[in-house]
Image (tube, rainbow, N blue to C red; front, side, top):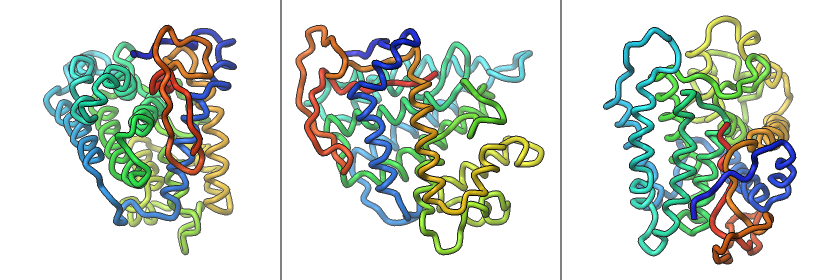
Length: 325
């Protein structure tokens, strides 16, 4: 069952915030937030076969970038070669997803593939933003809900799969000079990402020496970015932007004054809930029990693993909100 747009006008936002899909999505984000708390990217963790298959999928997307070089054009930003790259993903997405999920779940591939296609940016505007990132998280959550990913995959989901996704998205952004989607400019947290700041700040909770004030120190970032997702984000920002950090990334500069990583983490989660509420507008919403219609699809009982959602959920399909702006 392919998701369809359910949020089309501002008044539909209340439906999204009351939906089981919204609760599922935020529960998934918070479960992973706890799962990586105090852990380094370089620590040891289980890597299951589905995790390896997801990394292989992302490696394929990376290879397609190499096979689709930017074209010469008058405009500096938004290289039109991205549309060629995206057309290949649009054509191959279901096949890529089918290689990740077992054969008995093959009927889920068309829906799950929609979230994957929504997660890489907009091919018309040639932009990318936090909503596209959220679509990839929804893609992963769908895989958890249908049982492809399991509770003991939590660390690998963030450190192996999501971190590889970030690498591919940064390569897309740099290669095709993608514009930020819905950027708040200097007043936004970041032009492109949000989740790695949440999970990255969780990694740093109770760190014996690194405090929030240290992430604006270039030496500290260079020495520790391979261990911490938050610092990897800071490194990418400093590579992409020029001028004083306080001017081009004012929100992050202000966060560096927060006394502890736990407070940073809590504050970012509050910000993200507001962000998720905003980015749902005009995009896709899977049909869940919280929405009134099922259009004949047979509801199934699925259990979302993790401490935040251990109860059974009634779902028409594995749908969540694909939230790309």
